[in-house]
Image 1: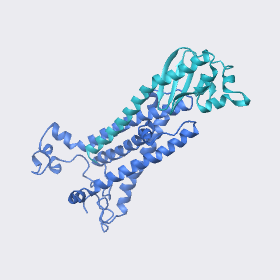
Image 2: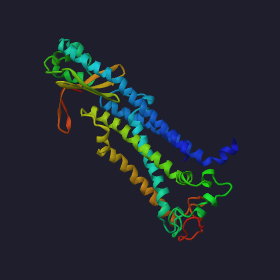
Image 3: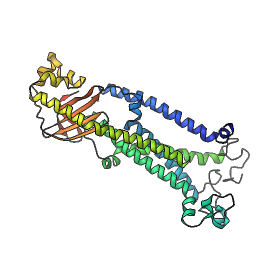
Length: 224
Length: 132
């Protein structure tokens, strides 16, 4: 058990932080929602009622989709684009999907390589792109969930303001949907930009996300 | 982030969305019944009963200038008509009648009329005879 915790401490830390933040969001969200309810002449709702509401779902989903998009783009764009001096980048000249030998697939696979890396054809292609595929799929499903929950939350507000509800299609083309979407995207893109550029010149001793403190600014990727 | 963790998160969202959708479907007939009950009371001249089916704010709105809700509500023109469509989104509902539109809110003790005698306006909220 102790070994398991030590070996998986990074995942466990973020799992607990995720759950704590989600519970915190639900509690603060319930209080905020109830303040609006009272000002609109309604009644406060319970915590279970709030966490099963479209308001909570859209707030959660809009953040999830942007996070998965951020990592999807980071994973995919770094295949083809480099940033000289960044530990998040491959070295200049290594752009692209690289050779089978460099990727240790097919006949170049090691005995310890995953089973699908040793195969050829579709299974190797699927496994070779599995991280991007899963992140992309989760991004699309989260964005779809945002649009569905967003339609419900938007229509709830429309009716509360004595206005007609709209269809899913009309909501996806609405300012509310794109405002929620783009306000999350811009912050994610800024965070990635900051990480890529700042890591050229700044260091965090001991972190694998940083170059060693004494590494030159011009050192790119893993040539530390 | 593993695929399994992502799947669990998505399942959570699906369950939330499913619960929301099911809840709305179950509430449609109740919202419609509340709207029909209100208009039945109006047509039958049971003003007190009609007022009891209004939300607290809507009732207060009818009690202005020293007049009771029951005495003011009979003076209003509320055409009503047969029900055409009911939409429920969360704790808000809209019932379209052939000559009128009604807005309702769900309280702990059931659906109450927030606004009635409503006419649509282009890109603006409905104008309503009763509103609260």
